[in-house]
Image (cartoon, rainbow, N blue to C red; front, side):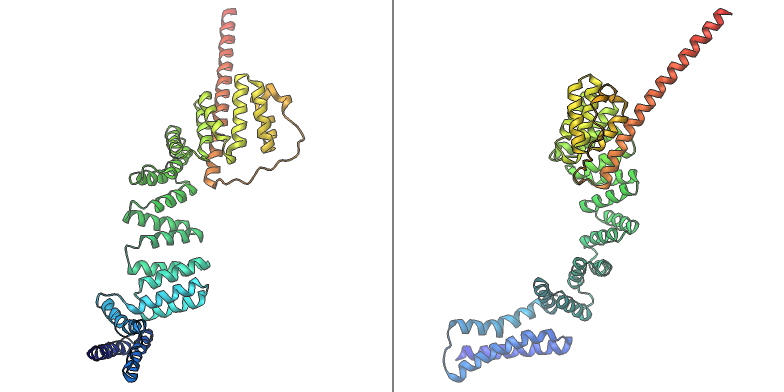
Length: 399
């Protein structure tokens, strides 16, 4: 009997406290625990009225609803945790899980209307807007989340990503610079910032970003590979080669950088090293035709005609455009008659290369062709100059 008296006094006291919370906060969400508490109290009163013990399970339910639940709410709020916010967030997540986005957003809007400083409310609402494609609304909510929690670095990054998707790359770069200034070890921010700077052809700035990132993550395949791309675009082939090799050492699986390494070796006139890299390049679908073509060029230069013809055929079978390219390439003059003409157009498989990867590949190919032309022109000019000297000397002797 004493237990039931203590239970009723305590449960009624907690009921009154929760009731006054509703009045003080003007927040009807507290009606939910209040109703549950009332059910617990009612069960306790029924036991007293009928004078029967309803079982252990019912007794546990009674104590949970009438004592444990309101006491937990009071303790949470005593330590600065808003029960109302927790419940709104929970219900919003449940609605979102069951694909009821409209109800989920409405619950969150109600929450931030009552509690404008609800960090979790703004952030969850931003995530829902983002998944729905409402990028501008998502940005607004992420900004509000950052205003509340200045250390929410993930939201900084999310805003930058969304700005990039909206085509506002300058604003994305500014946001990422701010983030890296605050948190220099942010790997995601460094990667995205470097990528955007390369796209805008600000290669030296991209290099600085990547070098800074290596201070915090010196075994990143992506950083070394992208750093190689940036160095290539400013014609710093020595550093580019070093970065590509480090990237290959970290992850050689499906590595597109082997083709770039082969071209750099060609620039240094190291055919043996170039051959080694192009052989690796043919194992990668995106660079297989190009690698076959370059191997064919190497074997022509070495006088290995049969191997040259085989690799050229392989390149043309993968991408028929190499037939026309080979026909215009003076290197293939000795095997010109083996280059097929009027062949059926063979469209290669769709490339998975990024635009930056395609541009750096083209840059290296163009640079190699340019270096070759310069060398030939220099040689031609030297021969002309030599002939002039001989003619002048001959005329002087005849006179």
